[in-house]
Image 1 (cartoon, rainbow, N blue to C red):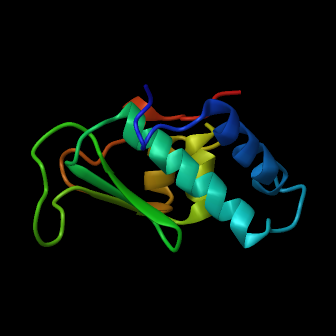
Image 2: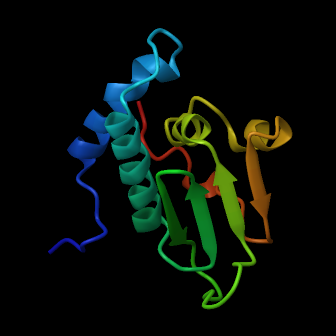
Length: 126
């Protein structure tokens, strides 16, 4: 039995493939629903791969998930937060961009001792 948070790998792959030409720089911006689907499914896959509630990963305006095992956050601002834009998130999720490079370039904001997602990236592999 699958959990409501599980992601169909085929559906995730199809959603990411739909925006891949844009990520590669060979196509214009994808339609908002296509981009939203790729972001949401890849974030849900991260939450399934790294279950927990100690880190909040935000990709505005589309979604946020809590993941990574550790102390559970229940009130106020979470102590471990990762935030980035949709393009950067999908580049990380597909391995087009490395975690360290994204941090160095200021494309990802990561605060807290558990806010390093290196272990779980990429989510979608070639």
